[in-house]
Image (cartoon, rainbow, N blue to C red; front, top):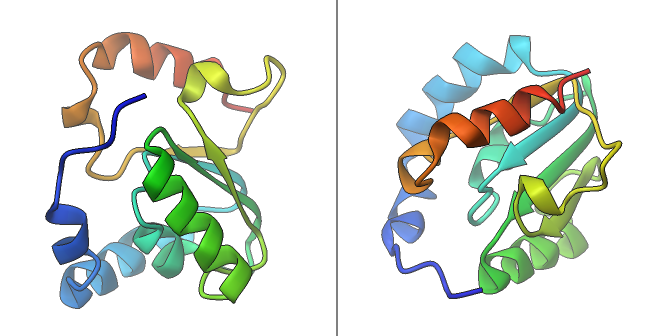
Length: 125
């Protein structure tokens, strides 16, 4: 797998007003077992994980970004409910299902977004 070329993630992790707004709007709807596809640096998990979330899976195809998420989990920057998997939705265990699946600033980077969303829908509980 090649490295993710975008440098905007470094900038976006500091977009506190946007993240605060996103958290306020989405947090009430995110609970149970959550899959975040294209987790980047873990900034979305930092603002959306709440006590209502039992498990948050950060799914990141880029190895260096997945390593950064793992470091944040070990350091306690990301909540204890978080785990990280490197890969794409097709790399998950066949029986893995979730209560919510999030694509935050991700679909525009996926060539076959229709196929991706169909694969995600089959993973919903």
